[in-house]
Image (cartoon, rainbow, N blue to C red; front, side):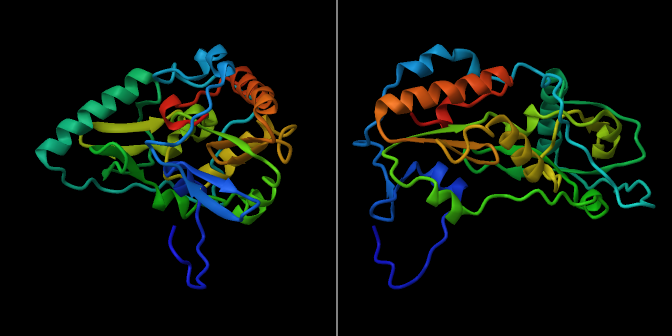
Length: 270
């Protein structure tokens, strides 16, 4: 722990999740658990939900009442960008990742007049490259979703009195949301090997975080401000004691199961 020297620091949910942080409301501090001595609660209820923690997503998301949509500013014409040159090793990786996405059903070949650029970014946690799409031209003509994201200080207030915590991180959360059929062509991206379009919500679409927050609030509406805090695809369950926590965990995992939402076990903490 470092002296703060009178300087306020804002810690985001992503940072706290990545660093396994625990909030101590009584002392108003954030505790970082040691990977060696940190105590991990063994809660049997988690073992009753193996289907919620698959090694891979089972395929396209199921039909839901809500689907991601891309509403355009009136008068907008399709936007297309020219390809940029990739190195031979990038082209090889491009082929591999395109095939993986095709096999999972997340993308399909396209003949859309739209076409944003595909590019690679470095993975922060695992190394290697992740295929991404530069959707800035599409975002510039998309009607913005004003659904609010929660403020971290408000989330802190909900945890007063809690002593037991678990966190659940959804597996490739965006890929668990379907795009409205009529909007799929707008997600088209250009590659050396042709045009492809997303059937699931893609990273880089500017309304994606707000829509995901909206969907998660629908799923956990009855639990918010009671024992659940949600920030996009991160779920924090908080309770006063271990017995209560087991009940809360069962409720949360049941909701995930009922809504066919899947978590990444090695990114969760129980």
